[in-house]
View 1 (cartoon, helix red, strand yellow):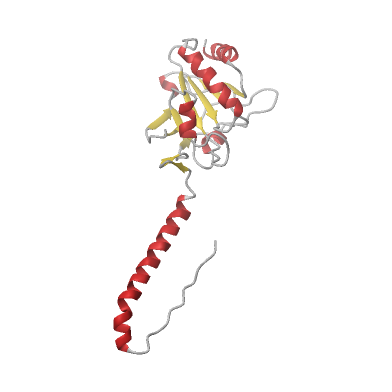
View 2 (view 1 turned 30 degrees about the vertical axis):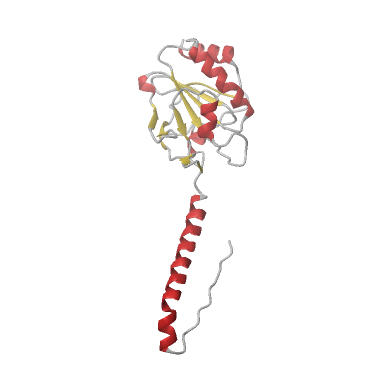
Length: 219
């Protein structure tokens, strides 16, 4: 970022100084206004905003992060306690992952991911048909926000895909996704009512495979 410097001169007599002082005052005021506007633009650039809506929001986690999802073999997270997670949706309303209120499916999504774009409607259709266990909570987490990539902003994207469940906007550091061991998109974690992880998977499954895994976990 380039820094501009302004040279000033000292008046040589009091009379001209008195006549020009209002002009210099207005120049100074204008300069301060320009600097303030520039600073506002620079600092706002660090926030993921679109249309006045924050696309990345603070999240609160406690507990032990889950081990990263392995590419193959046994999943070390199964049977362990999932971290607690709370945040807010794009309207600012608080959303919490609360297994005590019923089993939970947490789905991590990225607006630019083609697999997410195909999987979201499948999951919505599956839920609307009533093919998921009664009382199952489905919570989406939008993460990995990238303004330069497809379907930005996520606040508009997830609505356009027909998502009807609660959603948490992850922070700029993808804290929630990392705490749950994300390895790819879409990424799903099933949590039982005691807070333990009963299944995880990464990638696009489709309605039948999702229903089968949820039924096996909570059936």
